[in-house]
Amino acid sequence: MSIRIARIRDTELDVAEHLAAVEGAWVGAVTSFVGTVRANDPDARSEVVALEYSAHPDAEATLHDIVIGAIGDRRAAVAVSHRVGRLAVGDAAVVIAVGTAHRDDAFQICRTLIEEIKRGLPVWKKQWTDDGEAAWKGIGG
Image 1 (tube, rainbow, N blue to C red):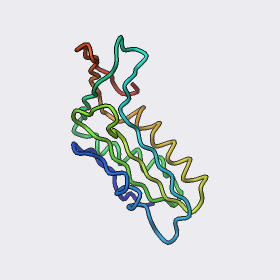
Image 2 (cartoon, rainbow, N blue to C red):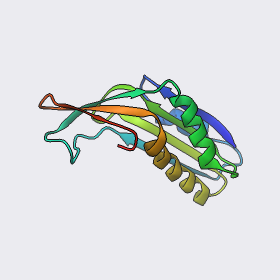
Image 3 (tube, rainbow, N blue to C red):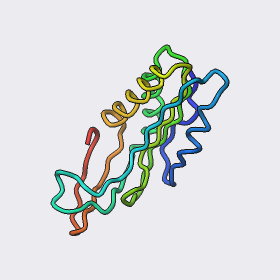
Image 4 (tube, one colour):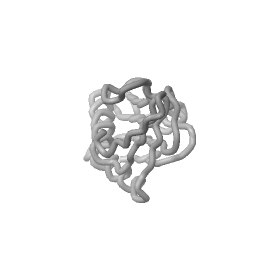
């Protein structure tokens, strides 16, 4: 198991950095996921213009634990980051890259990571809409 990146950061996320971090001579498959801020939310009355993420001080340690759980006993290289602060529509909020010897493990680990991040990472978001409304969303939201 190799956790190359597991961090919470307040600066722009670099997809290329994450992909490069999981390279290796033994890696035969790389999967990635990029979660971006979108302009629509079925629960919002108008268009979303920004999200503001905040994280618990232990969020990075929790992210590390999520990666360990997702990898299990498989050989994998993982790079994952979640952004905090105010993000505009189109900005990357989450970037995941997974390198494994075979594609099935890479897909499974990547899918598990994003599902567990959504379910259990202590990060909250405040969603801003073009009518000036703001709504808080919690873990799993």
